[in-house]
Image 1 (cartoon, rainbow, N blue to C red):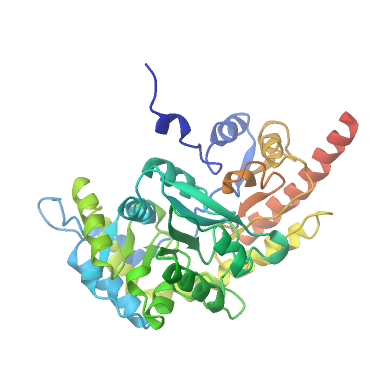
Image 2 (cartoon, rainbow, N blue to C red):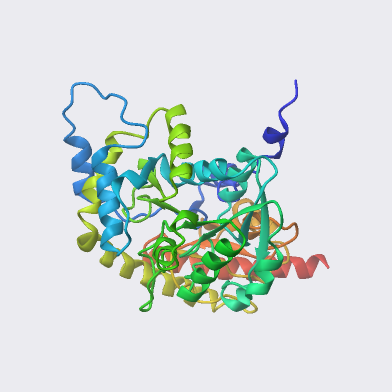
Length: 404
C-alpha cells in the first residue's frame, strides 16, 4: 500500500527530528541542554493554573466552534488596548497558532496556489503548506542584514499569478528580527496593489528588546484602509509560557475568511475548553507578568550573543525580539554538526541540542551552515550550553581538518 503524495512529501521538523539522538544521548548518561525548541522554562502564571483547577461544571462539554465568548472578548479587549478596532465577533479561537495558520491557508488558497514567505521562516509553515496543498514562494533574507526585508522590487518580482498571500512573522522565528513600521507597511501596500492577503504571525508581539515595539499588521492595515486584506495569527503559548494549552487566535475583519475558518473549526468541533479559561485569566495579567519576563529573555539573549562572539567566523546579528537566534557557523554542514553534538560530543557528560538551519528554508541548499538557537534556559544554563557549543565547533573543525 502506498502513501498519498502529501504523506510522502510532509517534511520532518528540524526542531524535533533529532529527538531520537537526544534520547539516546540521555540513555548513555549525557546531560543534554535543549537549545533546539522554543519551550519556555519560565513558570506559567499561577492564576492561569488556578483557573483550570477552579472549573466546577459537572460536565466538560463541547464549547462553541469559534471559542468561548469570554475568550474572544478577552482577546478582542487586548487588541483594542493596542489601538486596533477589533470586535469579539472577529476573533476565532483555534487549537494553537498552528491551526490558525492552517485555517488561513485553507480559507484563501486552492491546491497549487502560492504564499510568499521570507526565508528563513518558521519551519512548520512548510508542513502547513504541504497539508493545505500550497506552495511556499520564498524570498531570501540575509544574516548580514539582520534578516530584514530586501528591497521592494525584489519582493514584488516574486509575486506571480498564483500568489494569494504574503505570510511573515515579526518578531521573527527563527531570526529574532522585528520588522520596522516601514517594512510592514510595504507588505500591506503590496497586498493591496496585487490583490493579496497579508498574514501577520505575531505570537511574540511583546518580545521586543532595546526600546523596540513590534508593528502589528492590523494597525498598519487599519491606517491603510486595508482591513479586508489582513489576517492576524496569535497565541498564548509564548506570551504566557503556556505552550501545552494549545490556544491560538485567527483575527480578521474579512467576513469571508472568518466564515470559512469557522466552518473548518466546526469540522473539528471546538478548541480546548479548560485552557480557554486559563487564557482569559492570562489576559488580565499582562502588565504584572509580561514585562519582567521580557527583561529576563533580554538577559538570556545577551548571554547567547556573548557565547557566539567566542566562535571565530560566526556571523550573527543581535536578535531584536522573540527568543531565537539563527547564526551562521563555520561548520560546513550544520545538519551533520547537530548530529555530531548528540552522537559524538560531550564535555564532562554534557552536550547541547540545536536545530539545523536548513529546515527553516524552502530553497534547497540554503541555511546549510546555520543553526537555530532558542534561548529558553536560565542564564547559568545558557552560559554552560554556549561554552559547550564553542568547544564543539573547535572539536568539529579539528576533526574536519584531520579528515582532509
